[in-house]
Length: 159
Image 1: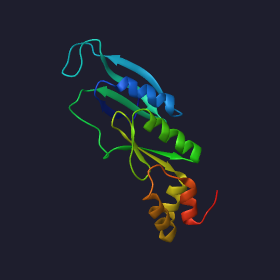
Image 2: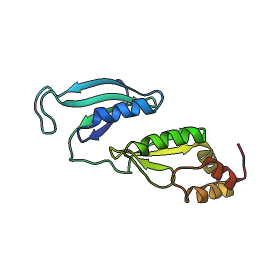
Image 3: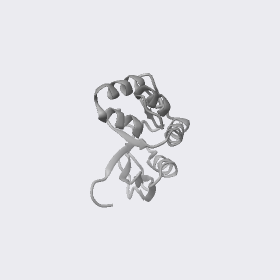
């Protein structure tokens, strides 16, 4: 890996998470699994220490650092989608694999990381500003998973 790499802290489940992301999202893969060369505060010699992986083209490394730190909503993956089918597929994969729903297109995976599954129609409406953004925002505020048809109805557009 070169350039910027996002380091995510896991409680001994980095490999499981990386493999789930690689199976769920395009342009995603697990590229390396590194084992601890010696005992350390978070793992024993031979245990998985780090996992290099890519999620939607973003270089990541999962560190099995133990229970000391937990993910929060201060960090989230934001995934732009084009269709309701794509939105549903990602949302259902995350929530259906032990994750949980939140509001306004946010959900959390079973490892505690937050995901924003955001249809482009919503992002584009918000970028227009004014009444269009207000209507899109008000519709979004009533949702968990984003409903593209409802956003389009709120802003007066159809697919």
